[in-house]
Length: 85
Image (cartoon, rainbow, N blue to C red; front, side, top):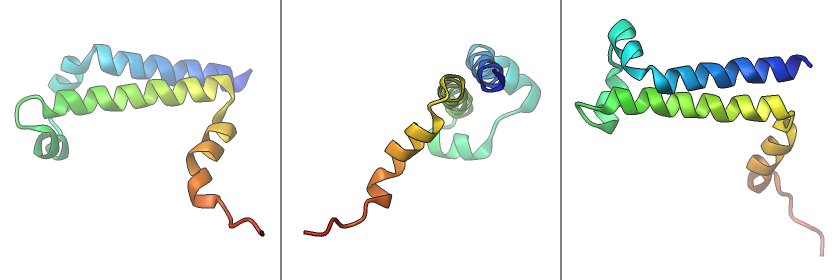
């Protein structure tokens, strides 16, 4: 039950970050790395939205309890051992 509540909180925080990006820019300012990499005017907005979408995705993975399966799938190419023939 705890992972469901944690997943809901993370997902809600991500949705809030995506919906209220302008509020975050006004209160926390622009992020230089995002401005440098994504452009001078909308870089921080895009960066905040990408972080929010990542939070939504992580929240859903935590909420469904599929974290270990997802990590196994994600890291499978790095962890694959050579099969004996």
